[in-house]
Image (cartoon, rainbow, N blue to C red):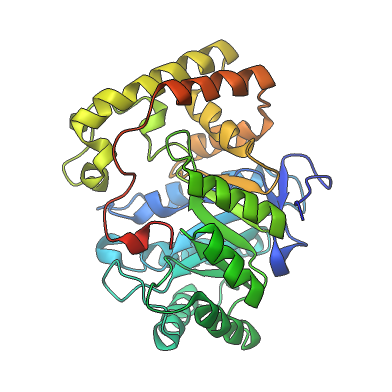
Amino acid sequence: MALSQDIVPNTVQLGGTAKDVTAGKVAHGLMGITHFRVPTISDEDAFEAIKTGVDALPPGVKMFLSSAEFYGPKLSTANVELLARFYERYPAYADKTFLSVKGGLKPGALHPDSSPENLRRSVDLINATLRGTKKLDLFAPARVDPNVPVEESTKTLVEFVEEGKFDHIGLSECSAKTLRRANAVHPIAVAEIEVSLWSYEEETKKVLATAEELGIAIAAYSPLGHGFLTGTIRSSDDLDNGDVRKRFPRFKDENIKHNIAIVDAIKAIAERKQITPAQLCIAWVGSLGPQVMPLPGSSNKTRTLENIAAADIKLSQDDLTEIAAVLARHEVRGNRLTGDSAFLWG
């Protein structure tokens, strides 16, 4: 059951129980506003980065916002706290946005824990931090817990929906098989996975195909390859010492030296089309299906508008063929993430 864009151009119909929700084709990831950032940017700048994107959408179309319980320094709730202040300042924007928040990790650790007790703790903490300024639209376990069958964790989340804690259920970094298993228990509205020109694995393709078949929207995070595909990172020296990307294998100098060929080739295509490399990357991810929402991050309003404008870019078959040839010529080196296997295709 493919999702439709017939209602308004450049939009996505969310899936599952959220199938009546029309969201902008390009979503907004909020992690970079607060995660690993000390000091944080001002509320005014952060609010403008969010508000500008919402204002750019047609009436009735919601901006899909992606946050997490742990998107703050030392895995704190700083991101959700900022959202509470945003909705407190701009209450009308609660109905103009679709808020997805991930959680379900062990407190203070990047390890999944989908036990009923921890999922309840996580959801309750998110709602308490929002302080009633905005109903939580969707909750998703940040990673699939290998110790808890996804059928059981989904049943737990269904109970929370019935209790009114949030409205829709999502998954994150899930395999195609896991997505199908969870959806058999309760319709999944959105699955959040990494998709980009250097993160387009066989499992990625399987998840995209399964989501389209089942009528599930995809929030495709890191469509810019954690910033690498923009061409602004030519060596590890371009990253601050505390930058988490320094721990990612693909950002090791030997891999950057190899992978930069992809960036240079993409940049040449973008220049011919008179768009930015970032916009080309976002447009390419969006071209992967009507159910796919590219989910770039932004902490300033100028970048937000640049990202959203990519929804208007239509890639021709010649463009797509040329990009496919680039990917075929240049194999990506380095794993996309560090950490245990639970963080990759649960």
